Length: 113
Length: 116
Image (cartoon, rainbow over the protein chains, first blue to last red):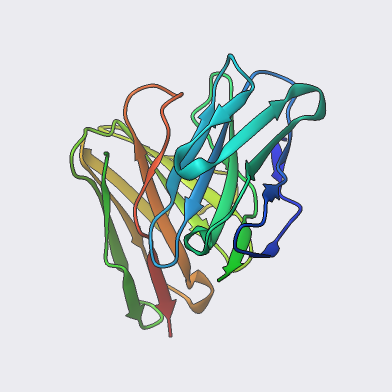
């Protein structure tokens, strides 16, 4: 069965620090990859997505993610975090031809001002 | 952008009663809506896929008779937790997308259900 792993459950950073959140999936076929963010008290929002093409995807608010097929990974990065990036981040995968999203367990990021 | 409205945001009910949660797509038509359940420190678990005008497709292990899903229009899906028990207490989230399996999901704010 397909699965998504997010190894970092809690991350605490100071402002201006660089961020990388890991996401690995298990599926051998074609995948679509997503990062969603949930700010405190708000609903999940799409941060960025990868369907095909350039494996380096840029999203909103300065976030980017790189799809490395050989490593089954789609790590999220941001060069310099801000206090407002404090949120929970979810990696998600859909597989070719299906409607089902499979989510990782989420990473709770806290940025200290 | 696409907005999904979920109501209520919080509900407390007594054991044995039923609770209905509504999920509306406000500015787009959602042929497919999804209902998730989220336990503390765990991932979103897909409960069922709701298709407008047809029966919902439930994931393995989800009781169809306990979690009734109705998708009567292209903008509304409801989840009714019947004969609720304390173990049904959880965070329920609906999501919707426009046609096409590549479309991103748009999420509601979720409903915190507490069964006493």
